[in-house]
Amino acid sequence: MKEWTFEATVERIPWLTDQVNEVLEGLDCPMKAQMQIDVAIDELLANIASYAYGAGTGEVTVRVDFEADTRTVSITFIDSGVAYDPSVKSDPDVTLTAEEREVGGLGIFLVKKTMDDMTYVRRDGRNVLTIFKRI
Image 1: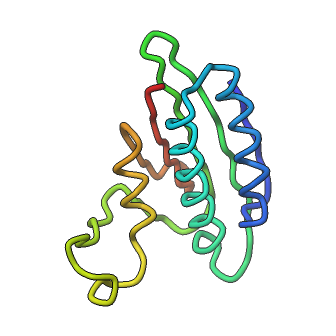
Image 2: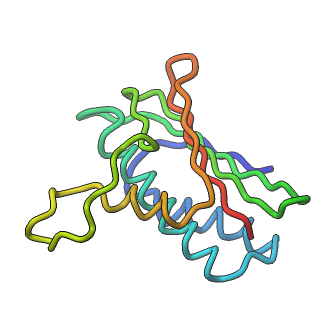
């Protein structure tokens, strides 16, 4: 449906969010779902920008698809960084206080809780992470 390839930096998060929102608005996506997708984009692109390429930078390709029959949006993030599967990351213990909890992990937890599904594969030396949201 739509695809962009660009340097994976945190500065590109607002731009990517705007691009995806333009697609979502064309699909009459409810505001709640759009906001949840925006948070997921922010978290996933920030993780790629911060960790995938170590101290350097690299490209990311983001593709948005829509399955009309199920009204499901899928957003795929593809990068050539170090292998990392956030779908198997253990969830933080949210019953602990902020002081008791380990730093990090809440963003991926939030993505897993607000999206309908998340898949990961390592293909041809690239991370391919897809989130799915019924709208």
